[in-house]
Length: 158
Image (cartoon, rainbow, N blue to C red; front, side, top):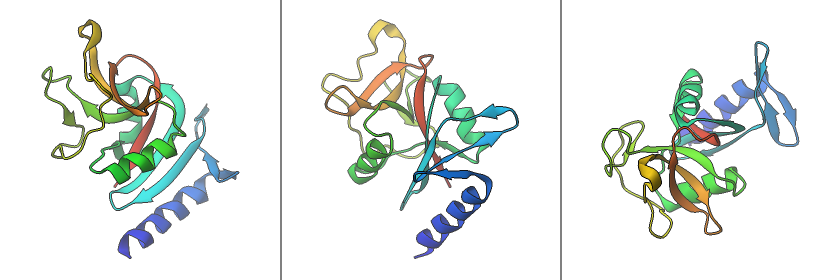
């Protein structure tokens, strides 16, 4: 119940500062317009999806400026919610092995309890794939990508 109240309060705060459009909202900060943002709530908090493509680090920085991090996924239910939130399109999540190759860590330090890697992934093609996306290939599973590739992204708010 507390989660529903919290999500409702966060939703009301965002709605008070944004312009509604077909169930989505558009954020404006100064002269920089952000593309469509959509949100969903779960037991882990509120998720915001941004269509504007950014490098992984820039996406994480954007999430931090909003008070969150790139999304962290603990269950198949959360994974399904985020895949749907991104409308089946690839998007950055907060999972990386940039600190030590082959040791994948969540951006917020949470323990690894769930993954949804595509077959034969992560494969670190070219030795540069250190960040994870959801909704890769037709299977809509996770893939490792070069962190300097621009993708839409999902933030998780506390």
